[in-house]
Length: 194
Picture 1 (cartoon, helix red, strand yellow):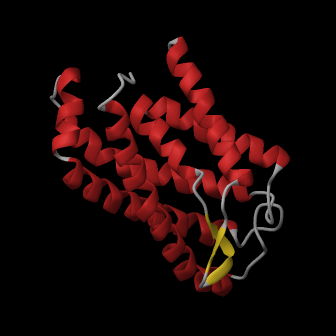
Picture 2: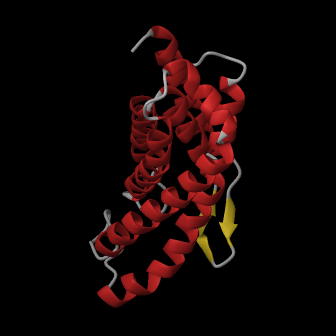
């Protein structure tokens, strides 16, 4: 990893933490204890613009900072967030890898700009599918655990929560991935990121 990439990761980490702590928090109307926020967008931008390692480092440091200083209502909550964002990034990355496979490095940026709608729709769809599927499984399991990991829900209560969780996770991915992809395409058209 070069100095430029490391510096950009530090910027993305700082932006992510600032947005997570002080950014806007809009309660979901169907579950006011869940908040729509913007902090995941810089993580996905780092992931797509700088590569998977940068996204993993950014999301990992964000999780550690939150676990130590700002865990929220549920002390294990930042780990729930980490699982959700990693699942979403994996889903979003698959169309990117498939669509750019076989292209030379120089032509990838042009290809992305030319096919941004197709890539954005497929990345968002797979990001939603992966995020909802994985968070549904983890929420079902974790919520049944005792605090600080879970809330000691019964199996039935955990199942009852899953539709709210699925709706929330789907809608977060629905705005996070397209905004991140559009930002990466806009930045890459002006600056050489890698």
